[in-house]
Image (cartoon, rainbow, N blue to C red; front, side, top):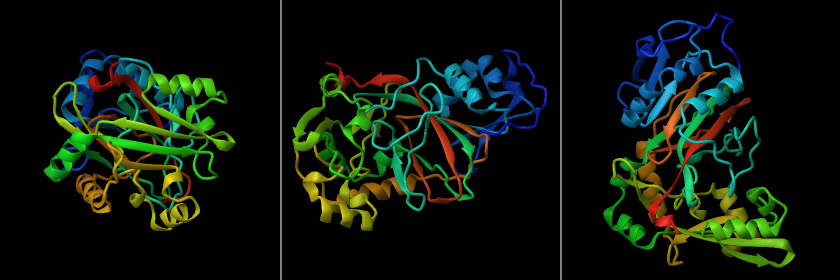
Length: 342
């Protein structure tokens, strides 16, 4: 991440909420809330160290915070801010769905996906039994064009979905089916970050994942999860799942045709069903994606930006782009839903 000009950093006192401006980034949208320094050379971590209570209050009220024009001090500064603005340590990307590189202690690049493709809105780790309450992003290298990371409030998404559809998902949940080592998608070794079957078996047993070992060292997994979660503090119902995101009908048409022709539905890298194993109708997926799109808020990154989102309430996405792009991500404050407690 590029550093701002070499200006002497200023220390801040415990009352230094006065050192920043807080306002909506987009006047007509509630998210994200923009926080900018009133003085040049204010280092984000130094300010955060003395203002954790203030940050937590903003986070609880607004759910999506964007810190801009601070001296972010590169990757090390991002790591420091993540540590200062979190209650617990960083989560590892295990049971991952895309390849990722590391840029520090559990600091990763955002999803690797063809630059010309759109990544739909989703919350991170909805198919895990323990996920992050806080997710951080940092713009290290901004794309030449595009490359925005849109966000959306999944409480509002829930409200937009037809109650009949919501009720069916609430009753049945979501079944995630994934296949590894079929020549498409990730290998199980990459997904679970191990070469040892026994480690996968142990992880699956601890995370309510059904395993089916196939010939040729291939693997199929099944995970049944709730489609709707209640926010721990507000008890607001949230559309917290990958039901539409992982569904075959949500794929780019060319990619979908290739996968279905080469593999067939049973061997797709990932697909979703109702929790009882029945098919989710394509028009239901379109309806859900439409609810997400109606809540999408997109804005242009600025190099050095750092964002903090409530991962349960705020979904994120990615727009197509040209040029080089590097967005860093970290997840903290692990949370296990009451439905997933053994």
